[in-house]
Length: 371
Image (cartoon, rainbow, N blue to C red):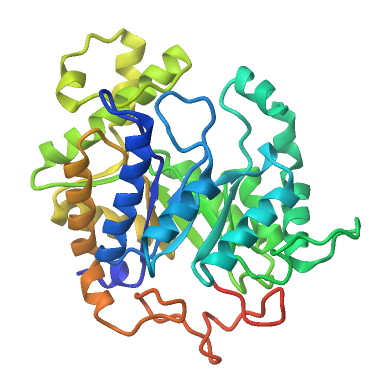
């Protein structure tokens, strides 16, 4: 195993994608089951996403789903990738994460994004518009203030106040600048646009200001990773999502994922075909040996401390097998046989001198969990 890969954490983001012939409730149960698998394999964290009014995604309430995942697992960190902060009042978000942290202490992550609803109709239903994303920095500051108990309203967020729930910012461009100024860990993707991703990471590191949450920049790169016995089988894992994305960009709606064999037989317009082929490029995919080489190059390019894998596909058995193979590439099984980390999560020992991760002071005066 590469020494570069061995120093990096590996985590999972599942978007609860629906599949042709399978309903939304099955997609949500699949997410919970995948979290159990990820925990057994030694992944560091498991996150769920927020989408509204999307036919192909069942995960519309990430904090609710995160509670189900945390309740079904015992040690893996659980969080959101992410809650789209412009869609919500910061007080309500703080309360939700306060409840999660109170129920599952030391295991909850608060991943936050600045996107607003996918379509005009969804934005109207949420009572939001595109301009609300411009207030993300202020919304983020207000949210963190509820945990610190510094709201000028005189109101106190219960049970969030005094708790230290690690915040993360999902971003590119301006969002990366916001994460840097706030001194928060950055989650950045996708792997298909390396130049844009590298530029965002550079901006983040250059502008980073240490905070109670992170003493130095912490970068998580996110994207699709598919591992199989042959390059052809790995590519087949990518087909359903690549077609779904191409369809969404030409029809305005994400459909449920179709089987790979149906995708291969579909007639596509020239525009759809171009988008579909583009969706198959730039990802990390192949055999275990090939993926190990690609990951080593990616990590050397980015200097990232963590990889958040976001793979979706129709074939659940192939998906789980891909995560098992990736765990072997990353040596996660070997790591899990070592010393448990301060949060009950195995992996590289990143504890500070006080036995807590990095010894960073938290909002309540105790040490805050690191990423």
